[in-house]
Image (cartoon, rainbow, N blue to C red; front, side):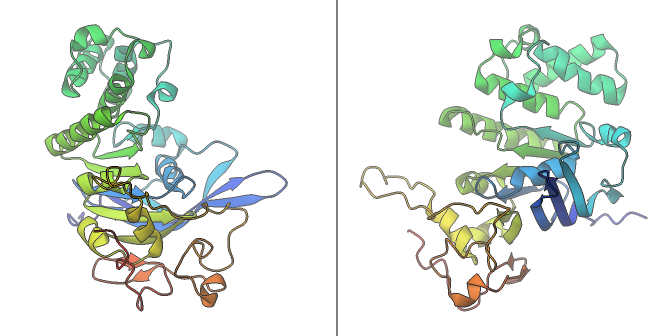
Length: 338
């Protein structure tokens, strides 16, 4: 009998490796573990190069053939192991059980097919609808995501739509078979602020209406505060902190998380001409990682042992995990702006 309390998605010790030629392998996702419960939103946060998108592509088994591979770990959806499925079996999971919204819709939508045709392909493949039935489903989905005149817009090609409408069409496609899990990989990155707010509000409404779980990937902790229940913070291919959103915002236990929070623009900051705080330096190249803590080269709290000893991800407060040698002795929230 299935445990009703079991997570919808369970990722355990996931390691994803890319082969760069000349027998050089780079670990892009290193020992990542997290769970997603039915109906909740988990945010995965971090700078570019932290491993967020590769984690999502690993879950979907969409790594570039011959280059990327899952070299260790487990990915279970409702207890079903995805890493051992054949490609044909995995095609049955994508779209039906897990939907995905990609960063830039113009690179994800086929320019030679209409929007309606592309959305209709999903229920045709997974539910056996005929072309007419699937087209009507596509029109209903376009209406669901707030596109005006959906019947007319279904005959549009991607280039005939604005960026916001293309992103709404991508959401419609991801929801075509009402998946239990939606993965959204920075779905508002290429949109202006007003359209971003509309898309985020739409996703919240649809999640509540359809009861699906969501993994929301972003570099923006401000977005996380609006959407997520729990947060996974990634840095240089590893998880460095996890916990409920309110707890993370109130008291970050890892200096990298605190740095991300300090870099969020504050209302009125431009008026009083205060400088936007940033994290010095850059995410290290995965082929040249520091010997100790991977954040040590950028951390203002680092001491000699941080440069030689690799911290483990360990339980901190209830429901929290942190990867830092000094989390017990320092309060990283002390320098947080009011």
